[in-house]
Image (cartoon, rainbow, N blue to C red; front, side, top):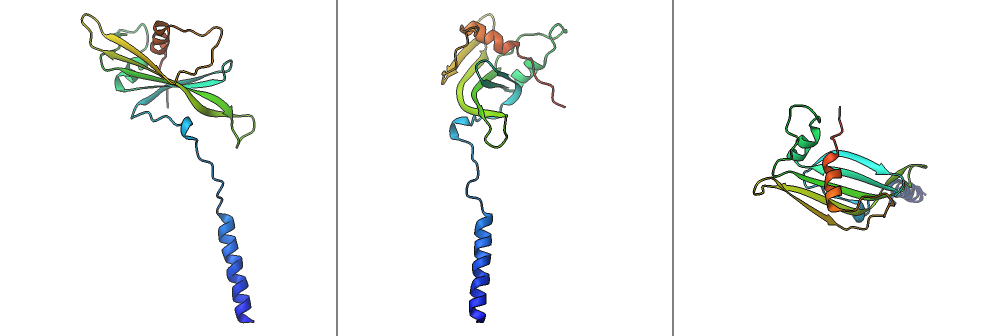
Length: 158
């Protein structure tokens, strides 16, 4: 009788310990992850029309450039070595919070680099994974995208 009680107690404990472990733990999908390679978050924004969210990353020089106040006696020119990365994700519904959205798959990664040129800094622009949703008012040329990225100001964090 004692062995039967011991077996029942050990079975109940084993069931309790296995029931407490939730194997349905949520993990981010690999397509939603962007490795910023040590860059700083400069700013973020979303577009309700295209249902996207974007984060602008940059190195130390890019952060210093984006932190400048326009019109103040600071040179508003990006220095060679400046790197900006604008990452855009799809928005999808958050399965854990009704009515909220989270980032889905990465749509595109736009990179703007500034290097030393002959007479002025040379600006390079590349785009990877360009599957961006087209908006009827969206800008399309590289020069406009570069201007848009350079126009972003750093968010103020407390």
